[in-house]
Length: 344
Length: 286
Image (tube, rainbow over all chains, first blue to last red; front, side, top):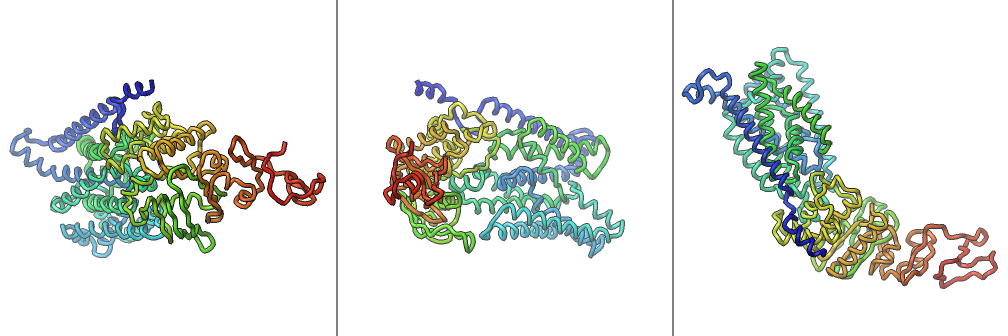
């Protein structure tokens, strides 16, 4: 009797990441919808208010100029999405984001001290592929130093590392704020434009450095997705299942720091975006499997970014601070989702 | 066989576990017992290489755990802690599936699925296998984690307080399962238990620990002795035999004589009987 029951249920019993046909259908439906939305917003940004007829030579010439912002959004979506999900997985915490490690404060401090010490000319001197690369390297080194130091000692502890990251971030932030108070209003004005995350900050000449970096880091994390699934179970279970937890942790954090550094150095701080899209993705994808989560989180991030830009630019005719709309609309949406479903 | 030689873990200048020398026999159930803070869990987590030791050597089936790759060890020994971080978007069956990770590297084959089904059925979780972990009670989740460890299919299984969160019926089911795992599947099961009687009735070997060291090791009838228990738990506990198993009765204090400060059970000055030095009576007083 018992054997017969097992036989009957045998074809249905499997342990894949999406175990019912309904869950599979739902996942692919949402993914398709996101792809369509991404395409619509992407094309909308290129074509809306474009005075030339679609497809004509002039149309593409205008579109090409807008393309840069679109590429920046794609890079940011890729970096923030993958980095946030991986980071939250390895630290077993879905409320914090990798920006906690002080990348953004470092970015603010670098930009502010450039203006403070060198004037507006200092900001100009920060532009350039070499300077961009140096910024990325400094941020990655800061992160590596922090991880390496705090995770290798005898009392290696993730919580302490995060705390130190927050403290360093807070310290750098206060130093920047202090320097900002001593700036002239016009200098401050120029600076604050840089300090809001904005895809128009992105300079197309950085792309040859930025794109390969984040593609490689992203693909490496993608290749680790089955390991990330195990790491999500916590240090002890992961060790029991044969992972060298500390090594995996360091590798993932290193890749995350590259992604975050590229994104921050390219467009500035995007504190809330990663957290928002990661949380939305967990609700939408409804699976633990990173192989399924990664594509979706990138799409969600791109849709959120491009949608916010589209709305901002073409409906409110406001250029610039798109992070406001992301935080307002995204935050509300996030609260609704969490309060309705209540599962992080 | 699990062999510990001179294993030492220092917490501070006063608090240390070890040095411990210990042999845990192959097959059967070995229970680690002792008072709180005796170092049972610490020792178990060190054997399961979740915690590094400061000195000494631990060998499992001849493999030095400090020198063997974690990935290879995961096919020999599995360990489950008391408290586990759990992610919400995971069903019971998917969790059990993670037990196959050392064998499958995350790509489940037909053989893996079969092992998962077996482990799920072995723990009687068939009805729950589609449920998410956050929809389970603590005890059910505990059983799901044990199923994961069983799916890992290792010769040695280390469980830190597997009876935690379980009611009497589920404790029984769990012990029966562990017994079957030892007897039918030939596994070596090492558990930490708080209740000495469970150890006495179900284990083949008991390791009694106190103050970071091993006090005694032996069969249940050798360990569950009144003076040994008194020494380990610092409590006078009456011991009686029940259907061939020695049961420690610790629910009521042993009645003491106010005059000669000996337990009245042993006979004391006031009831007129002479002091009995040894051996201790086994029968419980009426």
